[in-house]
Image 1 (cartoon, each protein chain N blue to C red):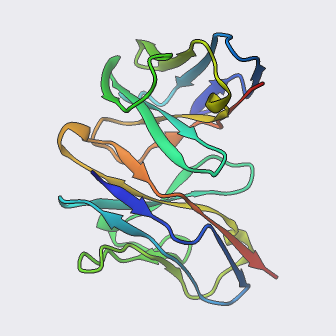
Image 2: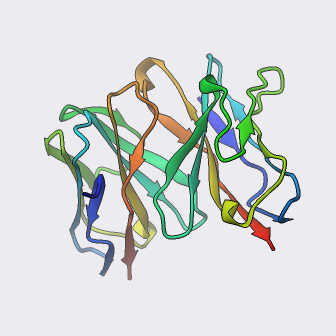
Image 3: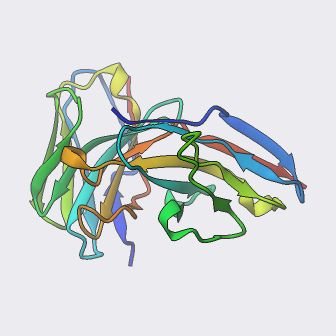
Length: 113
Length: 111
């Protein structure tokens, strides 16, 4: 009965490849997020979707494309991976857009070699 | 633009000692401030928010608008408090619902 789940947990790939990370929440929340945590543990928002609609899009390279097939899922696709993309990516959800308590997934550690 | 600063990356105290994790923010509007915590092998989770003015696990945090601070305090630290702590700010306007996190502070409580 995991609230926010992410797959895979670990992802090791080579530069130039394309990869996807999946996120699902079973909390019935309307809003979902993607965060990137860098090697210094700095956590920064990338995207936010509310009811499948993109509402926050930070300064993220176009190689990153989120997709929300329904409000329970928010996937992150990354094209042409670069070394600097190595990080831990966290998915989160909140009940609604203005609800500040966010529920986080376990994270996906992406390593680009 | 909003900004959150946690000046201490690492903080070590002994069990029973008081602990204060510092957080300063920069925001032109009226901020909503939060503390999130990540215990070892657990998910990041909300610890407390300033508007509720509550004490969670013995921790309190007071919003000081004059000093633009939201420090997290506990009078007697416990070993189970060892974790990564993030201060976060929520803004309104076009970024409604967006959380801006500080750099995080790793708290270690020694026995």
